[in-house]
Image 1 (spheres, rainbow, N blue to C red):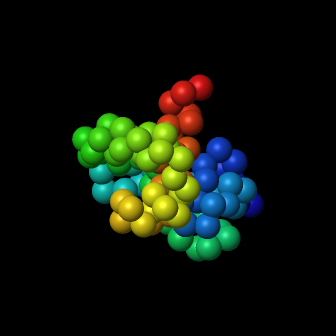
Image 2: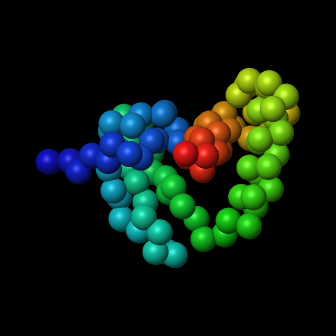
Amino acid sequence: MLNLRRNIICQYCGSGTAVRKHGKSKSGMQRFWCSSCSKTFQNDYIYTSWEHQVKTMMAGFLSQGLSTDEISKKSGWPIRRVNKIILSLELDKG
């Protein structure tokens, strides 16, 4: 039986119901596997020095009223990364 993780969202397909644990990275961080798109990913990374700058930049884009597509084009980040950062900002608020 699969151990599904309902609070983890796949960075690639956005599924929140088909994600399960998938071992640990070399640095010891938890990895996940999505059975919908068959991709693996991590939610946390050791090197997060960029995180504050990225969140500040993202908050600026959102305050300008830009859509995720516009933010992706302007920043050069993939849409899944933009969505993950926006979700992170929402979780930080409340």
